[in-house]
Image 1 (spheres, rainbow, N blue to C red):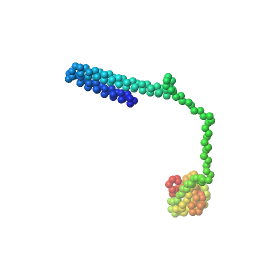
Image 2: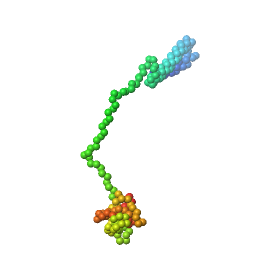
Image 3: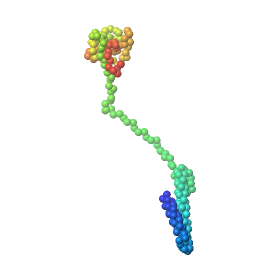
Image 4: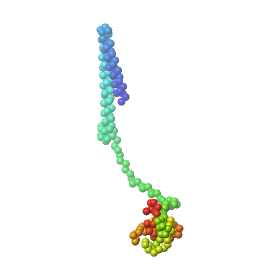
Amino acid sequence: MLIPIVLTLTGLFAAIATYRGIRRGGARFYTLEREAILRRASITLAGSVLFFLAAIGLLFNQLQQTSEQEAAAAGAVIPGVETATPQPEIEALPPTPSPLPTEDTSLPTATPTPIICRALVQGTQGNGLLLRQTPGGDEITTLPEATLITLALDEPPQESNGLVWRKVSSVVTGQEGWVAQDFLEIEPGCE
């Protein structure tokens, strides 16, 4: 690409020199000198035209070679141009599977932390809350006001005698049973 640019610039400078030579060959000189100046200007002009034609020819040649190389890369058969035929790779054996990672039994396993929901006996006006064997069933004991209890999450709340009953265990004594939910202040997120 550099050669056509150099040829074009050389042709341009030759054309400028021709123009200056023709202007100098005016009436200031005698007839013989004028003819010599104009002859040199004609030769310079012919050289300029040759440089321009050479630049155009080189550019056309480079364009043609580029298009032939692109066609050859695409797989077209062009006389005089080497084509690269892609060869598919064939594996003799299928790839071997990589072994699966084995677990390290010496590491401790993660155990889920049990969720513990607590509640407080409230709203009995000091009378306490009856702990029963079944919802609305026989009495086990009376839990005093402000007793801390743990809710049993494995048992869903049950309805009996118009009340909702929850299975609980006393934090202090460990006794288990059922109490009316209306008299419990359950911690947020456990309801």
